[in-house]
Length: 337
Image 1 (cartoon, rainbow, N blue to C red):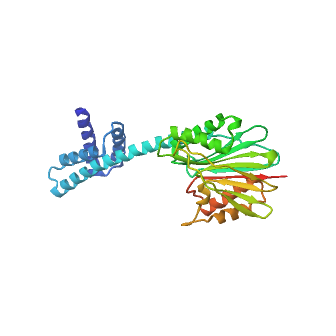
Image 2 (tube, rainbow, N blue to C red):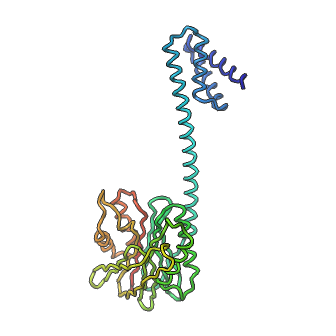
Image 3 (cartoon, rainbow, N blue to C red):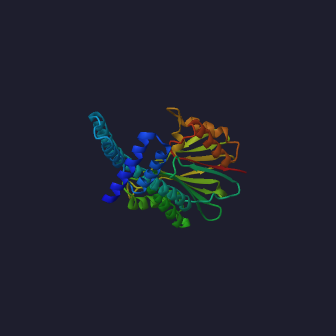
């Protein structure tokens, strides 16, 4: 090791002396090769400065004190610079690892939480769910019932990232495990509440609504666990009615119970379910009003349910400068002829 240091010092001194006397390009080429060798041997910036100091003192023992002091100052600066650079490098490496893990987790989330929109005669469905970041804290899931009946769950985890994704996966497989006779919304929420309360961190809880549609009866049963209100669009009067229900968020109390209402849908009636990423969109620094959301939905109501929710999303995406502040999930069900 000592021999290596002496060799480096000698090479550096020779090249420096040559350049001082001739400003020869060959000396610059030589120092480029030496620098690459320094990198291979993990020579730190402050060690190179120290080599320079030693070389200059050897070439000129009568250097002014001001110069010597300035070089010592530069040496100390490089020591602190090297420490800071190493810290930044470590942070960047950790960030890259984290970004890779999040990307893998986001892909796993899409796979684990994948669900298929049912195709039912006389029913027009539209759903869009866009995360503000890589991981989606919103969740939706279609559950197939007997005949043409189906359930739709929409949830928002208070707490984001990988824990939220794992929590959503638990909910999905819990819902899929319930038998047909347990598909009543109030029963689903009651059972899920027990699962969540027993299995997730107390700092994390979930708002959720669940609806179960019976096409033969034009009936939509609906329950909510502290979730954003839904909206019932009455085509005959071109009016929206808020579907607001009391219900404790999932995961707070093990014995919570939930209300349930029946909504009878007529031709072209719609039920809109959403998360707070829709109702809390911003226009600059201003939160939009609920009536603005409903007006935009009304403007696109002539489209199919799927195109309608996509158009509503694009409207609010543009309004926010194509930068979502929260996950955006919007669902619509329309009764057709």
